[in-house]
Length: 330
Image (cartoon, rainbow, N blue to C red; front, top):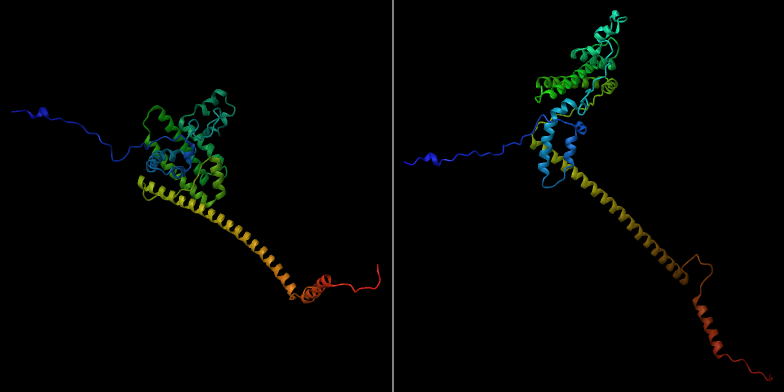
């Protein structure tokens, strides 16, 4: 018998997946993307050609991929900040906060003070220094430990310190510490809630706090019901259509205004010409009335019969008049 296994050929067929792959951990380095409407504005500027839908899809994948990094860094303007991450500068020679009230360190030698200085502090103690520095810049008084401003400053220091820690870990390994980024998300949401409450209760304190802490606060939009590429593309296309309709309506309004002005100008010119013609006709009618004796504004009276008879008498006298003969000779 013939062995059929010799004629069996197996192959692997690679097909494209149902959905395109995109990186949800994309790093953002463009400060312009901190604007919440950045991707919507880019979508409105896309050219309306045959590649419009593909360009919208590419823009959507970029938007989704950078959402996480923007959520962690956009509010605190940390996209290009890779040195201090918005944390205050603390003098290294300064005594750490928990040892400031010790009277023994006042007259202690420099070598002892250096042991208790910020330069010799641990990471946790340095974090406390950053927190105290930010809290002092916004708290209401020296004993304030429960106000919203103090809480926001404490959460801001925590967010920025952990962001710096994530960056340090990222330099050692490519794997992102999700256990830490998840905590950053929770703290960011807590701070957003505190900022919203402070904005509703005290507008002046809210402005002073975000200026002192250098927070870029935007009023959060209502969340979309469907977060899919198709729904987002349809929404952007609908907005684009509305904008195009508004632009065309503006052009039609401008064209209409120009036509109205042109019509007014032509009408005024025609009216002026008709008024001139009417004045001429009025003058001619007045002259005819004067000739016919119907005008009452003329001084004297025009008698055409007398004038014609006198004219005829003068003409006859010139033609047929002969002086009478005289008996004298000249």
